[in-house]
Length: 555
Image (cartoon, rainbow, N blue to C red; front, top):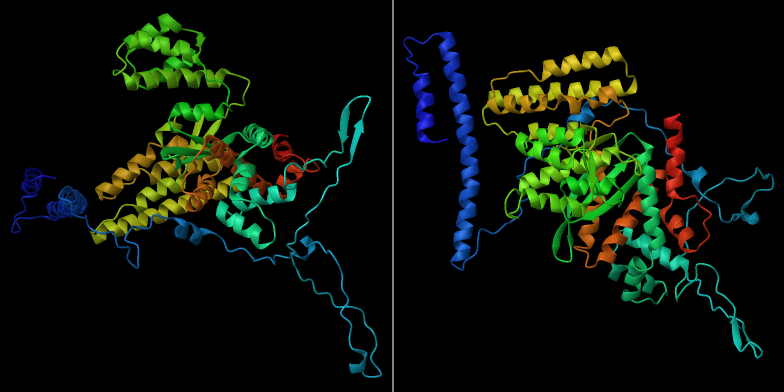
């Protein structure tokens, strides 16, 4: 805000205290409070910018910038809404978490009473049971003596075969434990090496690395099966992403999930085409120029002239990636121009083709945050209430009146959120209409605090996406599930800053998918991995378990 803008506001106020009336005085006070708030916001931004420029100037002079010394308390504003949401949760009676029925008894030992301590009239009254859990970590090193026969007539040697699942120098137990320690316990490879060394297993760090990354084709297939089964298991999918380092380069981990599974994908970009490619399960992307594609182009504000030219050249056609690049070369001969239009044309045609293809299950509703890459990819989109609530928590007014107005609105915001949760438990058409009307009333509020009013207005524009739960009560109100899956990736990065190879990246995505899915399905990750490595296949696949959980919902 410059001096002329401030002067204009003060000129408009032009209060003469000897002639002021209540209405004019109230308007003047509001204008002054807003001016104070705006000037404070700009002052805080200028402080940050000024420090950045001073640091940059010092660095150019060969000096150091301002050191970043972490204080005892964080200066960052807490934007979490967990406290507000917890206040509204009804306290549930705590149930005792009985676990004895889950414990497998491996052996029973009788603790006898010393007969010398007993009086003569003591009678035996049975036993008092005490269950103590213990674990034994011991080696089971086996020397296999393979029989060798030689046939002189055939000039051929016959050798006994090792048991299924035994390959190389290490058995399935060691190999399954390596994967479990890496992706369940989140241990680094040097620490895994140290763990085994402590218990008498002599394995090198390169061997640990090979166990984690080599010959994992069957697990890669398991991941594909999990993802495809997961896409079929609910009408909605949740999606989120986070940054990741691969061999010194910035990439992204895209996470797709629902209550039955979680799948991880490391990709170089996080645009719409990447999201579509993930949902296509590795199937080659194609482009369809039909009515839906042209409507999307209009929505993207592509000129009518260009749309007409595209219709003439491609209407009702499906083309490959190579053909699409040839087409774009005709419309945009200069590769440095028209980048946004190129992207919008590719995205619109790719979305249209994804929706009409039948080989891969098409996601009906995608629940995400408000990031642009997720928009229009699926027929419908749901937005996260918690993400929207955080934007209100980021407001930090200095005027007491504005702080009160913000607190009051947030109370009403989370009260309404609680009503949506109650609706999910017992949905009715009457209640849906009532909640829709309440949304309009709540987000048509005018408080006089310009930043809050602006934020309320922006929330109102997302009404269709935020109230998707009224149409689909099974839809979560927030995307916290995906954020928890993101946390698993971030905790891994705390131990392993980056991945060096393509093999390592693929293995990481695969095992995170298997382990997080097993966790949701109540399956022991170690037992499952051991079952697969040992070639026993006694346990049903995770994809099959997802299908079993899905069937009751579809009936």
